Image 1: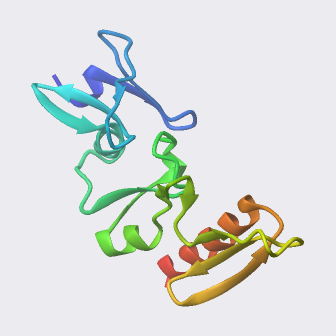
Image 2: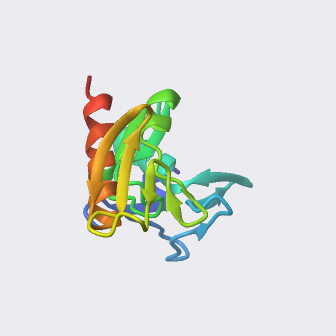
Length: 142
């Protein structure tokens, strides 16, 4: 039996399902979807990479949009650890890394930074996140 006999995947929706149980796995403590296969735990995004390419990822699977549950094929890429950390959008205490709220700045209270580079001030948190993500992506493609 191969992986493709045991699972089905829709690249557009990101749904990865175990055929025998019609189950999509469960969310792990780290926030990723996962399955146990033969008693071993696997992250769904790694199984998807295997399913789509017929080989395990060389590096780490990055969720481009930062959403650990968005397993659409267009949202996944295999990149080295250091590049994945540059694109990190992990939330700490409800705030994205590199995104800051400054209530004293009434018109543009949200600011974004990437490492030592100031990216600007924004009216909304989403605008600040978008600016930081754009900067991350531009550095990843260099």
